[in-house]
Length: 185
Ligand SMILES: Cc1cn([C@H]2C[C@H](O)[C@@H](COP(=O)(O)OP(=O)(O)O[C@H]3O[C@H](C)C(=O)[C@H](O)[C@H]3O)O2)c(=O)[nH]c1=O
Image 1 (cartoon, helix red, strand yellow):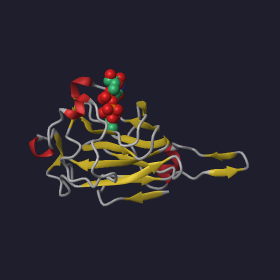
Image 2 (tube, helix red, strand yellow):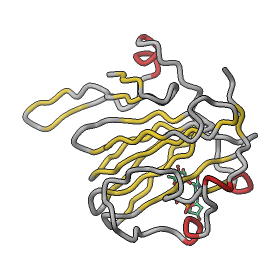
Image 3 (cartoon, protein in one colour):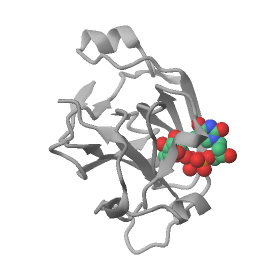
Image 4 (cartoon, helix red, strand yellow):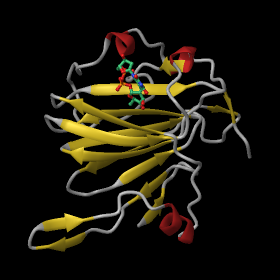
């Protein structure tokens, strides 16, 4: 159920599914069971849900700066996405490094992204829905974005002009980004 990634702190979580002739049941979030596997996540205070209608949509790379930095536990409830985390903590030995994974309704995988990492995704199907838990509330004054194609990410659908928001269109490249996060060893 737990897979640590090449970015320490970023974790893949795959809750078990109990299938039967009707379909399946899964506990999509169970604090006690995760802690039993040594995964202690901060308290979640807000759940988000977004739908991206078309394949090739990119949302991100986003963050909220302190004092409202957010950790996120992301899952894909319909369709499929390529979900990405980028380490932007000042002083981190993995600063600027990224990991990306396919999260889908089919594979049931979830990605835990701690505060101090950028988060973004590219949809691999039409009608991709994500549901994600956040460790702090939305704070527009702390909301920020880094240009989706400025971190060397190997996005799975190459040579496309993704569908992105006006905010993401205007985002600054990672090279110009002055991170508000520090690395706590
Ligand atoms: C994030 C957020 C947004 N909003 C409102 C603000 C806008 O009127 C509207 C769309 O917001 P935005 O364009 O920022 O939504 P996304 O592009 O999906 O942004 C999110 O996508 C990336 C991948 C993330 O990880 C963040 O959670 C978040 O930045 O929802 C709220 O009311 N509450 C919220 O928590």
